[in-house]
Every structure is written in structure tokens, then in C-alpha cells.
Image 1 (cartoon, helix red, strand yellow):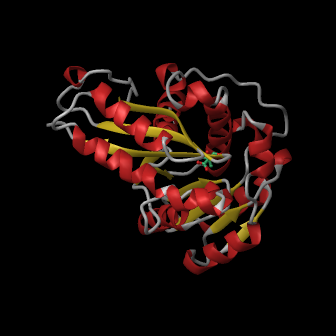
Image 2 (cartoon, rainbow, N blue to C red):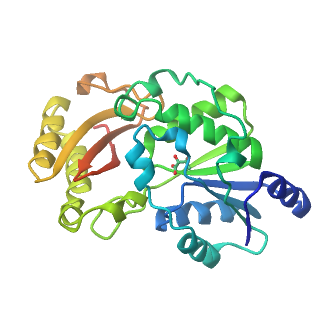
Length: 285
Ligand code: PAF
């Protein structure tokens, strides 16, 4: 694989190798098996895969989160080396390459930017829209792969592609989990040991909540999730909402759920100082 850090060099290389379709996996580094599964999915259908590693400042609404975000470039490159092919590219730009000028664009993602994460991280999805569209313009991929752990981000990116008329196929990859069920995340490595031990309760609880749909209505399911997790010392649920996977409209009663739509129970939890998100599909009965 080649490691390239400027836009000019990257575009020259993509034109030179003349391989298509071009697959793209944008990341912020601190790579884990979840990211590697995205790269493997792209490689399975694309003879050329570009992985970007760039911690995008415009999507952080919390300065401390940006400062503390793990940066592990050497380890990331070692992991990628094991699975990427000779012609594949790792793109490691700096801020000047991505934002030669300040990005002042404001996107309108409608409801997608008003619920769940958007309520707790104002401006986050606008920043994601800025960096992803900039990266799409630079890499010009045919296919881009994202993780379904960032459920709302995936819906926002599909909307960005629709609004901007990008000819890019967006693939959502299943969540990859640790042995105890915790969804893999770059932030897991920041969890304090005591908190990490209990973090498997998040997946366990939202999985049980999904099964509860057969016998309970949504207010009871939501109370079960909030109470089960909030009783763990150091854990605080920011939200647990059941939403459809396109408009992301939270449903408050089972009778509002429509046949033919897919629903997911989505959660954000403050686990110690670290914010974790996860989701599990809820099958209609
Ligand atoms: O999911 C992420 O890691 C980031 O939000 C992304 C898509 C790479 C944009 O910075």
C-alpha cells in the first residue's frame, strides 16, 4: 500500500493506476477490527481502495473530546499493511489539505440533524457533512463504506449523497463487537478499567429491549433500558430512542410502527468520561 498525505499526489496516483471501481473508507484513525471489516468489504468489490485517516476538527463540538481523541498513526498503518494490497492507498492529510480555506457551508439534513446525536452534539453532523463531501470531492470514489454503529451518521451520509447528487454507492457494514458484546469503537481504549468491565451491559440491555417488543409497549421498553443502565455506577444514558432507519423519527408507541419499515433501538451512554453509542434492530411482531 502507498501512504500519501497531499491531495495533489493522491489524485495523481489514482489517475495513474487506472483501477475501478474505486472504494473509499473514511476514518479518523485509532483503527480496530470494525474499521478493518470496512476495508475488507471495500476490497472485495474494488480493485483500488483508499482509506483516509484524518481527525476532523469541524465535527467535534467538545474541545476536550477533540484533544483526547486517540491518534495512533504508526499502529494504524501496521494494521492496514496486513490487509491492503500494493496498489491501495492510505491518505493521511493535514488540516490545510482538507480545509485550505475555512469551510463555512451549512447543510440542511432536516430531521436527521434534529434527533438523538444531533440534540447532544450540536453542529456534529454539519462537520461530518463538510469533511465527507470534501473527501468525496478529493477521492471521487464509486463506493464508500461506513459502519452501522454510527447509525445516524450513515443516514446523514446517504442524505448528503442524495442532496449533492454524488454518484457514489454507500454501503453500511454490520457492527463488529468485542467478545463481551461491546460495539468496537476507537473510544473504547479510553474507558477506565472498572467502566470497561461493565460496558458490555449496554449491548446486553438493548438486545433484551429489542426482544421485549413482543410483550411490552415502547414506554416500558425505554424505562427498562434507562433504569438498567443508569443503575450501573458511572453510567448515564443520554438517550434511548426507537427510530426507523431512513427518517429517524422516534416512535413513542408500538402502534406508530409501520410494516415494511426497519426500526432500531439507538442508545448513547456516558460511561465514565467517555460517550459510547450502539444500536440493535427491533423486529416488528
Ligand atoms: O465515522 C468516522 O470516523 C467519522 O465521522 C468520519 C466518517 C471519518 C468523518 O470524519
